[in-house]
Length: 315
Image 1 (cartoon, rainbow, N blue to C red):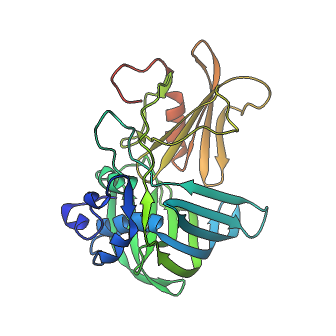
Image 2 (tube, rainbow, N blue to C red; image 1 turned 180 degrees about the vertical axis):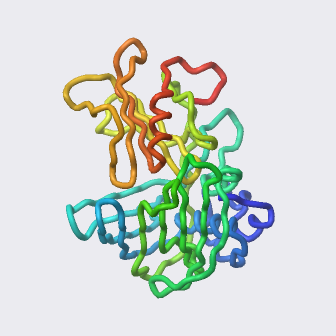
């Protein structure tokens, strides 16, 4: 995600994202990465472009759970399914296109996330390669990603040398303690998609009546679809990211008995800071959640203000 001119030469440069699609076969034409930045960049594209099935384990605050994972591309659209094999029968499914980094502003370009993320992370994290290991019967390189401040978590990735797919990931809190470990134990015949993946449509910036007045450096508003059948029009939802970490902020009127108790709540490896605030002439519930230090989420929730956006500015 931190990328230099030399690193880009070894992985798909921006001009290989032709029009509104990315040709996955271009990955096979690139030489092996040589730097930490180039390895991370290759991994971002590999996550989109390889079809595979895998078995994995996740170790977190709720114990150890095993999963079956599949990822494929059908008619330019990605589909990923994760199914827990023990405990409650939970299935997560994601279907979509390669995301954009920014909201569309007039005719200005809106890069695909792997390209934009690679440049955006510079100055936020330090990347370095830390040797090679064998995992899931495959050779990997270890990539360490250290935050340059105490406002976000660190990451360790073990990337498959052949494909760039992450075979193991570790999340570290601000004290360097392991928060979560995710590891693929079996990777079945990963296959590079022989075709293109569509980029997400360009999304114009919406009009919001509220926004957080403080975010850690590098967190920007994400152009993602945030409407859900579970959320009515009274529930506002915004997503911010620095390229690795994500903060979701919800604002809704206080009504009924479904409100959360103000304070800090733990949700697996994530935390949620809950506040009841006077905003827009009524009491509203503000929730800031993500895999970040709790004090960061509390400060974000406390900073939310209610006001119409200034004309000509981004949300």
